[in-house]
Image (cartoon, rainbow, N blue to C red; front, side, top):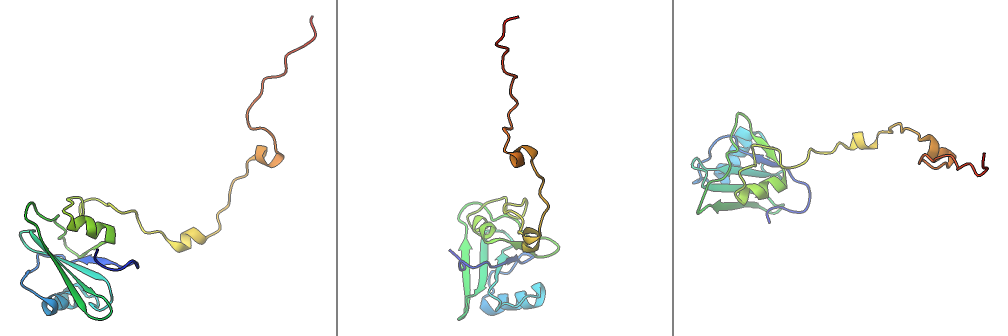
Length: 147
């Protein structure tokens, strides 16, 4: 499993990458083209033009790590576009397993906004709950006196 258990961001490079590049070459792509700090601890995904190879560059706190994968069958999903794509760790793992959904549809839920969750929200009151009454309607009791 790549990365740690902490929340990290994954950025996919927006063009096919030259898989001959190593640590320094990919470091340069992150700094120059993605405009991110390669030493931030985030992960950076690069995919070859034929989509058979992928590399992930990661700073683990002590040095740069470079993970590489070559598919024997099939191709990786196309994650290229006008700008770099941001993936979740779950999406990265699905991508590396060969899922074709990554980059096409959202496979992870949207990020939660802490501010939205902590704001006080007015709640509606339920009249029968306040009075302790039974919420189920009842039939009137049968008339026990014969007419």
